[in-house]
Length: 218
Image (cartoon, rainbow, N blue to C red; front, side, top):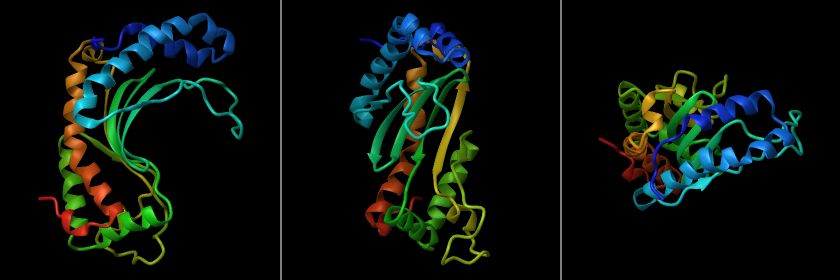
C-alpha cells in the first residue's frame, strides 16, 4: 500500500468529531476513519519503518476510567516510533493539521535523574543546549512540561537551569493545513524532520543508558 498523503476527509472527520464525540457519530462514520485516517497512517509508517523501525499507531479510543472528560474518542490520530521508554519520534493528525516531532514525553525516577545528570555534566549538557539551539534555528519548537521551581539538588543560577527544569523535552513543528499534507510529499517532510531530530533522540537514549562519553554532539 503506497502512501498518498492525508485526504481532506480526514481533517473534516476530526472537525466533526470534536463537535459530536459520541458512539452514534463514530459508528456512522467509522468507514471514513478507516479509509481517510487509519489507512494513510499504516502506509506512512510502513514507508518509514526501514529507516526508523516499527511504529505504534495509537488506538482511537480514550481511556475514560479515571478521567473527568468522558468523551469516548480521541480527536487526533498519532503514531509513535519508540527509541526507548517514552522517547522517540511521532507524527500526528488533528483538526489543526499535521504535526511532526520527537523527544521524550515521560521520564520519572531514575530515567529523569539520568537525563538531568547528563544536562548538569559540563561535558554533555552544552551539547544538548547547542543541539536544541540548532533545531530552533531550523524552525522547530522546543517544548515540554517544566517545573516552575528549581529541581532539588541544583542551584537556581545553574547555567542550564532552564533545561534542568524540563520533565519532558518535546521538539516539533506543525505543518497545519498546508497543501503538502494532502500529497505523498508529506512523507519526505516527516522523514527529513525525524532525521533532523535523530541526534536529540540519540542523546536522550545514551543519557538514560548512562553513556555520557558519547553525548558530546558536535
